[in-house]
Structure formats: structure tokens, C-alpha cells
Image (cartoon, rainbow, N blue to C red; front, top):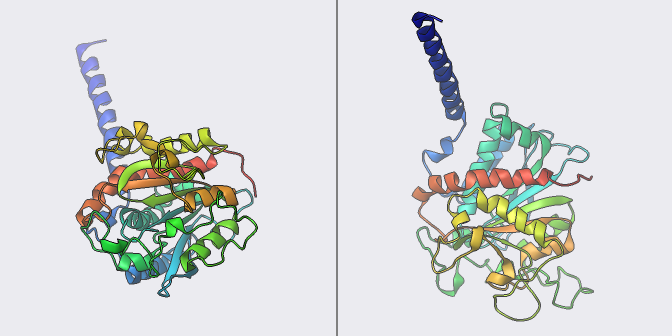
Length: 343
């Protein structure tokens, strides 16, 4: 082959590579992430207005639910997202994220708002998003404790005195308010004497065939899997294994390994978590937690994700939190499809 032909071929290959790389760049730019341009925390009224707008704009993909009321009469909003949102297809698995059950742990709250917009506005243009929405019945709950959020303060990395903000309006820690498998009260009415928010989410959990769930918290950076309690009364440091311990470890690893900070396991010294995961009771015991309730009282596997060392970081940090968690959030949702599908 002559020199001219070689040069011509080389130029052609360069042009192909440039066109391919440029098309990838354009594709990435087309992804809707405008919610990152002016990051802010949404209060109850703003969430209500935004989710109502999304429900109206995407009626074929989104449906707004309230599963009950908080102590101060705020709706416990859930945005359902699916290609067939008005009627779930036979065998289509149900997935949920629940955030902000401690009202001053706020990163997960905003990530749910980001994720709702990301899924809806990129549907039809991003193949991964489109496939996920077409095959999964997704439920996003930005706040289980809207009253606590309204009592919290941006920029505070630890809870206020008397745990104001973390607790609900009645002064109850919602993640200690669920029936516990070790309390010996299996024959009692499990909703009796519990908080409005707890009863609402318990009823929602046991009334629907959820497959997989993520519970979003703050104050650490780690993926924590069941059991949270052991029934021994000890404070920490020994595993309390569920019958599906290996699967839970895998699911926790799916999230942690895709998170550039969590997977290192050392984000919030002096704590260290190999691989960015831990058994809940190995870390510290939680009696009456929502994670264990899902597993014991329904067919739903729930893993808890602690997302930031600071519980309520400044809103300017939210784009970074989205970048850190985006792949993890999507990958964990996709894990809904790893098992046998039922009705």
C-alpha cells in the first residue's frame, strides 16, 4: 500500500474515533441533570408541589401516593415510577427507597428528589433508565419523618439537643418504633401504641409484595445489612446473621462497591468497615428497626445505606453526593431482577 493510502486510512480511522468519542460525549451531555445547577433542600411544601408537577407531567410514568399522615398532619408522600404505572404487570418486581426517617439525616431525602427527576426526564433517551423503568415498579419516599425535617437545621452535622429533628413530633425515634422479632410479643396487635408514621409504613410494607428496599440514613458512610438486633441485649461487636446472610452481604456490596467513598470503609474516622459494609448488630444494636421488620414481616429484603458523615450538610454538597451515589442507587435497583420473579 502506498504512503498516500496509508495516510488516508489513518486519517479515516482518526475521524471514526473522533466521531465515536464525540457521540459518547454528546450522549452524556443529553442526560438530564439540571437539578444539580441550583442545589437546595426541599421543604414539605416544595416536595408536594414538585411531585404533584411530576405526576401531572408524566401521567403514564408517575403516580403520587400518600400512605398516611405524620403527627403534624403532613402527607407521607411516595412517587411511584413505572412504564405501566396505573397497573403493574404480572411478575413485575416492586422496589422501594425510603429516606429521612431521622428528620435531620437529609442527603437521602434530596437524592430521592434527584432520582425521581432523573428517571422521568431521561426516560426514552437513556437506554439504562428506560429499561429500568420498563421492567421495575419503583417507589421513592423522600421523607418518612417530614415533621422532624422541618425542625432540623442545615449545616448541623450532629443532632440537636434532645435529638430534635432526628425524632418525630412526639419525640419518638421511628427507627426504634417497629415490632422486634426478639421482643416476645408476636401474638399482640403489632400496630398498637405505635406512631402514625410507623403504622403507615408498616401497613404499606405488609400490604405490597416488595422485593428489595433501601433505607437511606446519614451520620456515617456504610452499607448495613440485617439483622440489626440479636436479642442478647449487648451493644455491638458480634454478628446477628439472618438466614439469608450471604445474599444480604452481596446486596450491600452492590451499593458500596459502586460508591467511590463508601467502598473504602474509612470515611468517618475512627470507624472502619472492610469493603464499606457491615452487619447491623456487629456495628451497634438497633431494637425495633425498620430494616429487620421488612425481612421478618414481609418478603422484602432491605439494606440500610448511611450516606454522609455529616447528617445535614450544606446544600452545596448535594451535587457531590449525587455523583457519589448515582451509580450505587441505579445498581442496587437493578438487583431487584437477580432472583425469581413472582406476582
